[in-house]
Length: 185
Length: 328
Image (cartoon, rainbow over all chains, first blue to last red; front, side, top):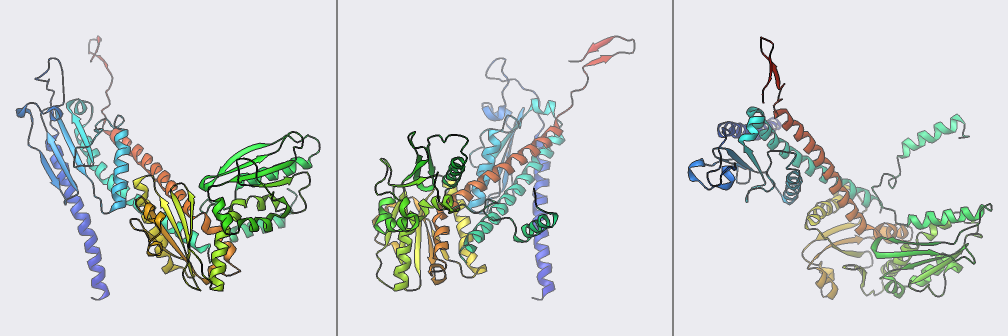
């Protein structure tokens, strides 16, 4: 291939990647906007209690159909709505060993601070890396469109952060190796 | 200070050209023991200062690889310091001529028998330290000289092309160091490194991959190879290696003539001794750095989330007639 074709192919490849990411995120965004329609609902099992129905899962009529938006086998979002709460579980891109442990550490770091992030769940749903739980009380005190913004931005930032951390580790490794070995010459 | 302007300028320019010393930026580890060096330096200076009486000393401190140092002097003669070291690998190093090496380096300072609980002792009178300004630095290299003994034997065997039985030094609790002659031009140093944390293994793989690849960019450096599961072929049949290969990774350095000839061998020994600690140090630094990044990212995400929070406005409202009421 001539240089110009090679260049065109490379640019197109990059924009295609970015386009699938944009499509994925916009799909997640519209699904969330549809799913986060919550109202207060007292527990039918226990008097005077108010529990998130998506977590208790006692009454089938209160649970809506779960939806998975997936970009590929690893990157996907599971949205489980119910009458008064929504559980959003995210699977994050992990290309190799290093990204897997970076992702695991980062998610554990976030989950330990779940109290600060009001909508974060302390344990992710099995099969996913991190989970959010949004209840009607959250939607009463927060703007819904901003919540959806937050979740989508969260997904973008986590991906960006993991690739930046991986780059940082690789750069550091290269510098360390070169510094150490040049001592011998 | 009393430097004239021109000297100050010259020093600054030279500093810019030479750049900060790599050990100042904390990329490379020191191979001497800084605590020992600074303590001796201080004691010598205190002894020179005749205004105050010198106090007796009792300092115990550690170094990498489980080495324990002690600097002791009693009240009868507080300026006579006994500098002692104890190390699991000491006796193994003595087999390869460590005692002769120490005698050559420290001369009369080396004591015939060590303090109780220690393996080797040097004795120094800080009131008469002699004229050598570098004495504290030389003393701080005690551990380096001990570990250098098997390396010198290996390098001599390579240069003279004599038979050399593989050295197997278990210098740490669950790690070992192997020295083997390959032929009359090269030899191999194998580190068996244990990682307490499974994540460290992944970091180590990234770092050691770069070590392996550095050979493509740099000329004249040792060849590095790494394997996590299996012991390298050079260690076939070595019992301790088979036992360690269950849990440890193996890093091999192949050293060539330009590393082991008379001009460079000291520098090679200085640098290769701290490799295992260098690797772990940088893995820990990376983890610390990543933590810092994660903390920053968490606070930026929290800012985004806070934008979502509604401002619960004023609770107190007024009607047109002037009555006030509160909206709950």
